[in-house]
Image 1 (cartoon, rainbow, N blue to C red):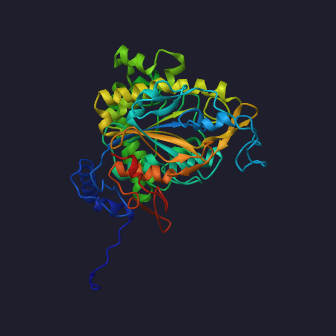
Image 2: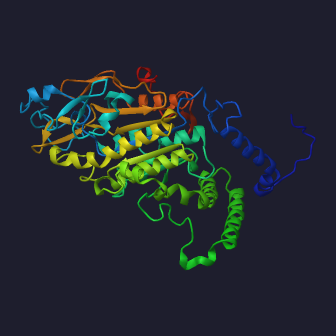
Image 3: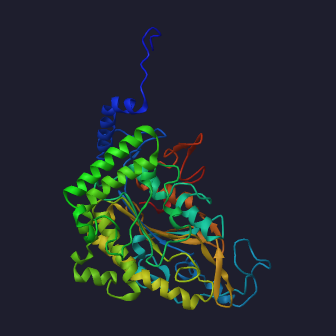
Length: 479
């Protein structure tokens, strides 16, 4: 209780922050203890929230097929399409979000075969992933609320159709913090041909502190992280001069922070600067794929033009996870009408090239993680934003369809060789065991030791969640 007779001392913001500097030291210590699991969980709505129960997974790698991978041409075998091929059974009017009027029922032009002891059906476009079906759990009845790329991609990455919400990787970074002081917690490896739909919005921290946004690395660039070192033309800016520059920036930033308390953007810039300094020592080794054996490079397809880009990013993802990055997202395909999974024109011509670019690298990644023992505590997720129609478009293509698509998971805590849910006989609509992004996210958080209903952040008077007011853990696919 404040004594009304006590003199009131007036201080400005800078003086106030200076006097509580010791408190910031305590906060920093608490952060280190939390990272090492030496503090109890924080169930509040603000601050880092530790695992609320024993996690099965410590890290996640998400493989995102940008554009809407066709389920009935990859993992969801539908013999009824063969029997009814050519029949006009689709809607008479163009559904919202589709780009054209539905044509006739179209069978898959690709052969399906059963694989593994589980007998999973897999298309001929994925011969390498087919070898791993006994390690995977399939969500066969995923569903979206939209047939439009942008909102659907937001939904799969943030849980909402609209922009402005934190991505899954940002929530995980906020909840669990870093496994390494020398590498980013949340890394995004986009396709070399460009960013996906929504650009950087899929990796945004939204209303969470800005430091939790995804760090975008250009795996094919030299170096992958631009401006980490001063160029040769400014060699004088290295060594002691570099440290002097950072010291001056720290001083300026702290002075600015004193006048703008609570600005997470400045906090993020300060953290990024400190991380960049540490990465000058750690990043060159982590990004140096030449350190890998020739057998590993060949397995990932680094020397083959078709697989080189995605293979390089899968291998870099493994190296980052191995060194302490917690969440890595690897994208296949840029935004736009070509060179991705948005196969409107001709599924027979368009799907095989994009499938071939990822198939061998994904198989190599799973094998590499398994061989190194990393698959035991690493969760691998393969997904897309929605599926395709069972009806032809433009003669031989498939249109957008949020009614049903497939996601698979492998690794930490996953029951191998199982499937959950079912689409209808045409693969157009999920009918049993329907799952949305909310259920996928709830399951991912559960494997990381987090209760999706308790992972919250208070924003504009609302306790926000990654799963909004939805979501259930899909226990049927958990070991």
